[in-house]
Image 1: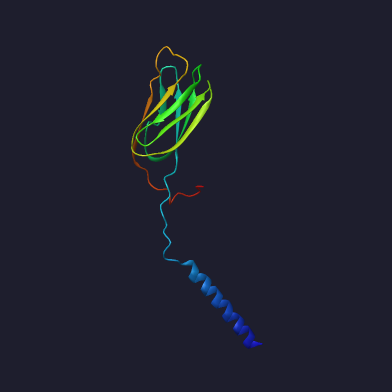
Image 2 (image 1 turned 30 degrees about the vertical axis):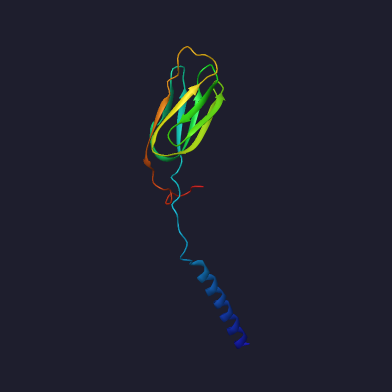
Length: 141
């Protein structure tokens, strides 16, 4: 009986050692995760579009824009590395733009198929150097 227990114990230890050795692969690269997305808010008014904050670091952004006018408008985000058009956004409705933005200057504008009395001034969004990676942030999806 003693020999059988020793052989079973040795076999179990050998299996555990083989399993542990497989977990320590040195070729594994822990690549940095992208920065946490930043939520920006915007509003379309009769005379201008605003986005806040207007200056952020490069990386993923989520811009939620509310149309506070009486007309439907398309929303356009344009810059060196991206061009996006959404809408039309109905009065008192919202639309969301999700993009990863590189450093540079971007314009967020509102357009309409209907002729308007005066042009709606676009918002200027300044994107600075890339934000830090989110590797050490807890409770992220």
